[in-house]
Length: 608
Ligand SMILES: C[C@](O)(C(=O)O)[C@H](CC(=O)O)C(=O)O
Ligand SMILES: [Mg+2]
Image 1 (cartoon, protein in one colour):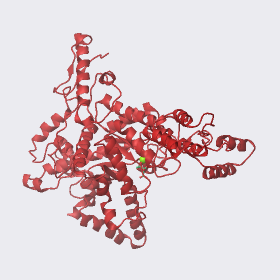
Image 2 (spheres, protein in one colour):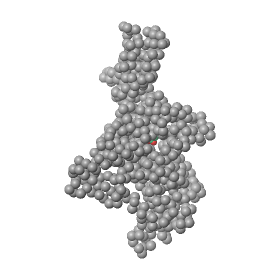
Image 3 (spheres, rainbow, N blue to C red):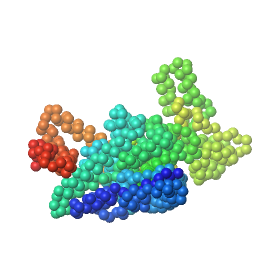
């Protein structure tokens, strides 16, 4: 039961009031935060906090001591339930399925209602997505690995992508860096998000202050950068069971992520989407992860976006056969003479075979053994019984009409079409199971499209991890998703894992790729590892030439180009906020101008 209800005013109101005294002609901090581009700051609908009624007052409101329990408490609970129901009925959640009630959420909230900036950013992202979807245009961005990249992208890219791969290889919370197996501590990506969100805030404060020092005329002409670009972050597999997913989702919302993507790989078997050997989890298991993230954000009262990613286009192993939705894609053997792979390997080990011999046997077994779906086995079986094409098509039509028929039902259907007394279909999905117990899975766009559609009701956006960049594949996926879930946006990974020089693009089709697939519904597109690659490339160039050409290489490759391009990091002290800090200190203590970091004596004056 509620012990005490605390209703709090949003801090934003105070910020807006105090900033008004600067009489700056740019919008208020709140409207800036919510704007989706610097060019068009006022065209989008304002954000109302979902719990705005609870935040309506300027002061903390406590239930009177005498009314802690009883009617007042019940009334508060009822009021919050009604607010949450109205919130869920808002356009923000159109097309989103929840398998729980408002009471399930409200009773888990506790008495302190908080607001989170990431939810405001989520609303900003949502508005941006809706605007772009309506125009069939993309939001396209480049993964950033640090605050320098964040600030340079902010004027041009409308959202910021934080890659798990990049965190895994560059900055984990244990400082162990290695391949993208999702094996880093689960606060790794949230920490990077927090670092970026704090950097966004710092650079925004710096800009706000700098603009306040200008005359109104100069201010009106000075370019404005929206640093508060919604952050989209990599939640990998959710890093564990459902409680881990919830804690991860909470960390992300607290750290500042507007949207998080969760993929249907198995925690512990996870690999970068473009590596081999991926193990996916049953459809329902991943849906539960998506639900866990949403439930967590419901409890927090936030609107962060759930992005559901499937790796089933290329994931060839499945952790469990429990979900009937996966049955049509599970592979088995239809030849009675084939012995269990796992048992054979165990026998080899017991009889002293070396690891290399076992590996070689296993690799050869998987390569040479014919693995088929139950349906494929059934059709071959029907043909061996000389059943008529009409009878066979009765089977294929029935499973097409009900793709979620479980294997037991498929066996019964096959038996019902065969002549009485005929042998049943021989098909065994256990024979090829791996030593870890995984099932073999017919990966591909059929499975991936089905999973995307199954995840649809629980996700704000859908992401199918593909093996190559292909407009026709995107078109087919976009059409299938649009039919099942009209208006559901798609995400595309414009991954540097693809060799973009090897897919037959003409200069024109390469240039238009992003816009071509945006028309098919891919509203959010990201070059996941752009930050990593651009960093490596410029560093290689500089490092090689610097070795022999010394400072002329530095000036040619970096300093001159910074000046030509107007890179604000050229004067890195100012970029880092030194003048802003001076101004803050100046407000606290007077008469110490000689202590100012940007006063006389610094080297940055050389750039004036
Ligand atoms: C997007 C991704 O999840 C990431 O962590 O950046 C990776 C990277 C990539 O290969 O593009 C992935 O696709 O798994
Ligand atoms: Mg990743």
